[in-house]
Length: 261
Image (cartoon, rainbow, N blue to C red; front, side, top):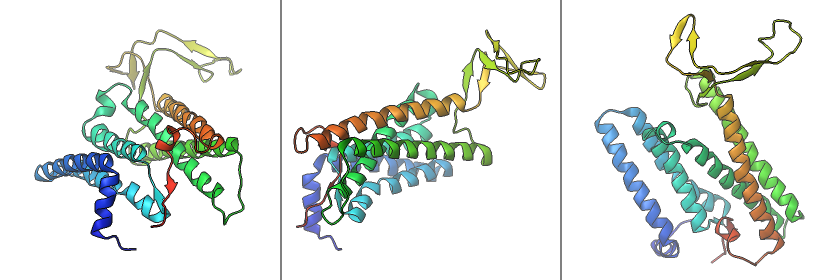
């Protein structure tokens, strides 16, 4: 299917805010890419190139599935990509900005909930498919889809840490722990160690004021906030179907089938 220049101009006019955000982010990333190549910083160049490719995802999904993404949802997706890849990886926001990773995982749960909801809702409304689900069931599917994506991402982080020796599952410093492995009687008694203020590895002191939790707390935190984002959208989606055609808030985040011209 070919797209004429007039169609492109019409799309820009109808989604002016989305186009402006897309243009600004693209200019920033291309500038960063040029600087990275000039400095021979190929890791930064990779993240810039990846971001430019990911920026095309909303348009690709619209074309592939004949959908119309609401401007608000599309802008959120573009900003999410920029925040994760450019600010998070290149700008070190994951390390320098408190709770940056938590914020992004919450947004991810919300976005994936919207995607999962849209996929089921579009099938539910397709006259050629005998497939009718209640509002509560569509919301449950939306929630489960979002949580599945969140779990798969944690699998990815764990795999990268194990096989590529990265630290995507960020460490946490804790000052107490409970463990049955420390029980000398071997009778599953929980041993509490509190007030941990120093750490040594192989007899060598490590400059950390506490015990290093390797990834577990980060993973659980990410899944919990993903859960929050998924639940929020599941509730929004429930009332969207329950009161079909009423209210405008939910429609800001739910893709629709593109009308044939």
